[in-house]
Length: 72
Image 1: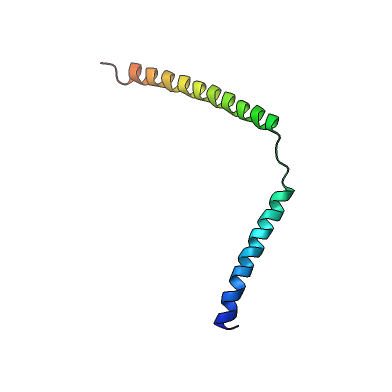
Image 2: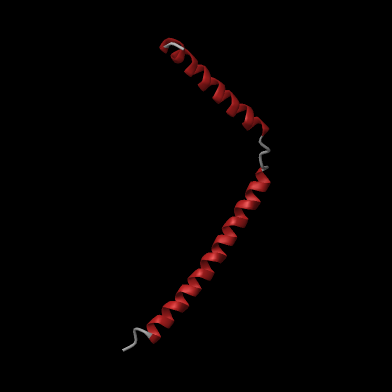
C-alpha cells in the first residue's frame, strides 16, 4: 500500500464509522418523556435522602469526636 492509498482510505473509514454510529443510534430504545421525568425525580429524591442520612451521621460523629477527644 502506498502512502497515497492510505490517505484515501482514512476518510472512508471515518465515514463508515460515523455511519455505523448513526445506524446503532437508530436501534436504541429511547425512554419516553414520562419515564425520564419519573426516573429523574426518583434520583433526586434518593440523592436528597442519602445526603440527609450522611449529613446526620457526620453531625453525630462530629459531636462524638468533640465530646470525647476535643473536650477541655
